[in-house]
Image (tube, helix red, strand yellow):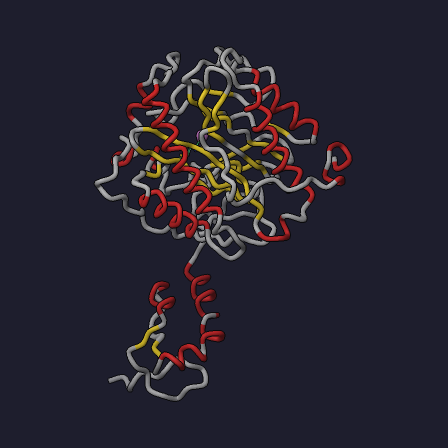
Length: 380
Ligand code: MF3
Ligand code: CO
């Protein structure tokens, strides 16, 4: 028979009581018993280091032989699927993983929303902005992308909303987290954010029968905010989206957005990632039209009042060739260069545009000045 349990306090020779470290419990670390609360508190600074090392021993790279193009690695295991209460309206893929209605859509028929539809879009987009801001406020070195997923998921559920990515084509999480060379659709996992990372958070909500979609790229820690390439990349992408939005009004050809975006990208020595585009969004997640972000595209059609769609350019420091990790979701640049993306959901009005996912006064992130060295051809 084992003897009495010893207190885990490094400076303590007492027998353990029933008090267990809550963090150890959560991580599944056994036998972290202490004799008393004050002993636990006194030993906290030394004790807590075990959380990181024990945690590190539990995680693994699921694709050890895959030739990664950059320095980001998947860090598994993924956390279990987060539940959404039955009382919240689910999109059709929630159960099967297959967006059946979306697959059946007539790709040449674009929706025009009436007043009720427009109100529905305003509502879900406002909620989506709140969820992005809440999630972005937690971005800092040391947190995992899975922790951000937990925050996003809870914020959606609190707002009676289904996180649209969850089980969309079997995507396992509630938001996409795409650091550094990840172009888009990164899966939240146990990777810890590092000072100097850049990170895109892509949020989509389903509420009241309508979807919202928005994303922003953030600087992680102070190091990223001093990195001229990171600043040039992020700020130029932010500006490119804003410049495209500027021309939205009834009659604007869909093909014109790409011209503006690519011109701005090129002027700063950046490249547009061409395989990804914006899309219609309403009671469906990805209805027509598809909206290219590059120049000389052949998109047909023009903006009409009542149309809702996204523009979501991705720019990169290198070439726009991309590939997938073996998870079949994570899209990365083949040269390992970093990318940035920004996205809004828009409503075309009689006179112009309403940016339904616009930033609020206190939204985290936001533009920082581009230093001279990062500007334009000089850095190339
Ligand atoms: N917001 C993403 C987009 O419009 C879609 C994310 S859903 C996912 O491209 F399942 F693909 F993650
Ligand atoms: Co989108």
